[in-house]
Image (cartoon, rainbow, N blue to C red; front, side):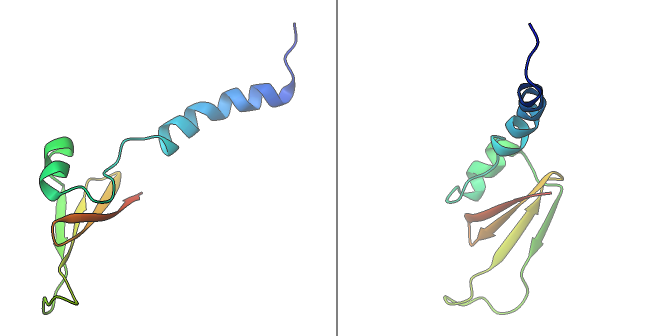
Length: 82
């Protein structure tokens, strides 16, 4: 039995979609403590400079090599995959 061409293309693209779209990354709202417990210590840490006020909270970025996690105070805002 011969399979249609679109079916083979679909089978080749599934592993890529599974690794990128459904990968396990920190989600919005997680705490720094939970991220560190699940993913370990980051490779590097950057903190925003300047005054810290209620309107301008400290932004911290943890780099894990394959992705970076942005925190506002101690809560995850966003995860960027490299």
